[in-house]
Length: 112
Length: 112
Image 1 (cartoon, one colour):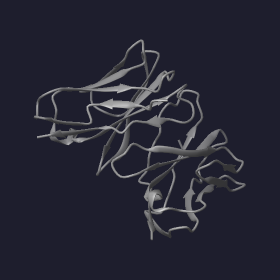
Image 2 (cartoon, chains in turn yellow, orange):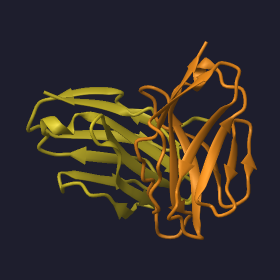
Image 3 (cartoon, chains in turn orange, yellow):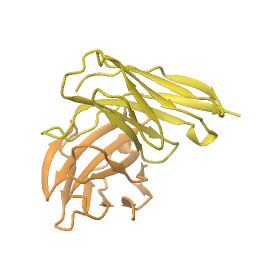
């Protein structure tokens, strides 16, 4: 079966712009989580959605937001981009959010 | 979630067993031990998890000490494709905790 699909794979944006990243989970998975990975901070949890509701949120500023649609697809948005937002953004899906997560290949965002 | 401690790097010869240790001395009774790995520029890949019994699947074996304060991930016959960063994560299974807290992991290099 198809894995977790993230689009786009690569993105270059300018400081001050906003960006939307997309994640399609494995069919049947209702939990979608987002992570940011940078060389300095490693992998950090952003937020998690289940049945269109945000259940957990990491320690990120309000510029980072997300949502989940009725078909479980999820988007995350970053507004007023800063250079420090350059990172690999990873999405993971799970059937219940309880045990194993399947990660996508990520979207590499570069802010210039 | 309990904190984990892993060596920053390890080497292993191709074809030999790779034994990756993890200390989690503050683990609680309801916390599972999870292992993920991340091959360069890809999303993390779930390997195995366990509560207190040793576990084995097609990828690896997980040995958890009787006091549950440490564990070892064993790749029985390491190949060059097993070169990756391996993360040991401790978390409550299900419940209200829906995030994975990644540490710095162990960079395993499999040498020919």
